[in-house]
Image (cartoon, rainbow, N blue to C red):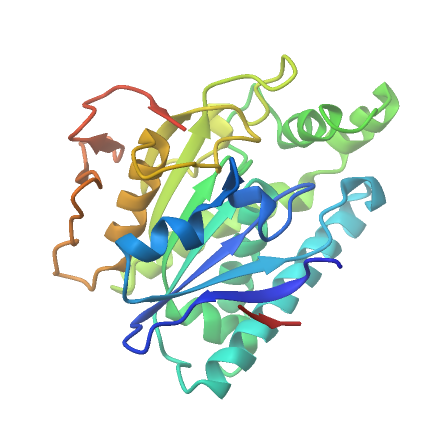
Length: 308
């Protein structure tokens, strides 16, 4: 059975926020977040953040079905963004939690879908689904999301690398992908504009950008400079490849500790201090906006009910 739509992992009676997981290419709403049989949003996160409803979203992420044409690719991303918004608004309305703060945790292209929601939510009426979700979004954690961040690594080449390691792509298709990534570049730029706008309005979205340090099939799929929006949020590395950077088997995994710290930071209300766990790291901004792990110093960090 296809793992599509929203799946509710946990919903405590005293929940005060929603955490939504969104997978990337060739992933699904469970396997993307599972290592050695441990589905960490359930097995680990529920023990550390007890006041959150945890949801995971599934969509068709088979890149071989994509027509690598800029217009079509952008429409596919927008379609998934709209679908996620509709499902979230419906669930939150039925459970009378429409105004509850929300945090996205996204891997790879899933992060672009989440960014699309925030961008679209600023361009439509206040009663539109994307606007409703965007206005309640408090934090976003991106794991290997290919934001355009380097003139030496064009967005198209990053996407082509992501496709190449799992799908035999001939040189002409790679060239076409590099030539037709303009709208995706615009999405990344618009997202930066929206982040700045929210800061000016006193409604900052707390963002953390994680990048991989290890190659997958001899390819560093999303290089550091492409995995963040420069000038915004925190950024740090996870000592894993693009596929494994979102998989954690136990609470002692340095990667899990870092992602947990980012979620905790995003979950607190303005002016409040993040709650620390016995094993979670305390993280802070340094002068460059990066995460500093006070447990590991400056080392690299390694790493129900269904609503269809």
